[in-house]
Image (cartoon, rainbow, N blue to C red):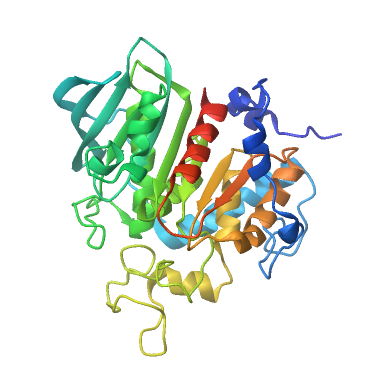
Length: 365
């Protein structure tokens, strides 16, 4: 009889699988769909079916299917430069702030590229859990940008997490600057940056490398989704209202844009919805034509926990997406590692953020 979880995967995930503390009721409540959406799978293709039509029946089968999905997406999106084993970190300024130390830093995100950001370090020696928080710019995430409900790094550091916050490569999310060595779509490149950000955190003496998560809102939500799914060393993830399905009726679920998956060196499409006069371009066009969707991509997370902090773009009907992904987790023996909260507006609120912080405290502390 085959093991429920392959030995190599079990070893990699042992910190999570061996967690003994019970899940709080607040997290239990968001780790299953409301009755209205229980068992609703939508029209999505199951990630548990191989391209040749075979059904995934065991955990070992899933590892083969996962490799198939990952290969498809990586091949289509293009090649990364080599992940940096020890990215350079220059501390530009360090000062005490409340119950932590704030460091303004310059970090290496590619062989030929650096960005400025912040590392926040709790008091004490650690090792601490940690989070990477990408956004348009790093000040918002660290509570310095005047948008308090998006200050995930600040809030989590006050709770005992090391945090790293950076902004868009090149400074403009719509005009991302990619390394000369990158041969990939911009959204995949953000995944590459996430891999290097994980390395930055993992190399800090204050950080427990087995307990590093990633969280972002909106643009940062897309970034954190691709970072977590493409770099499996992230122990868990939170995506705040990124749009977890391709949905061409929603202006903000805009994976078709050239700064995400629609980059085509021969064609520049106008920003906006896909129409007959403004058609799909780049890898996004190919993904749609070949029947790919974010359902299978998000399944790359399994069995690592993730939370969708849903707003206007990810309302309760997105449980049809998550139910497909939950089927993978169920096969692997986990029914409480895919969660979603919902709010009416795109903007985070106190309640949705409380769930984010409780999620990280449960899975990483």
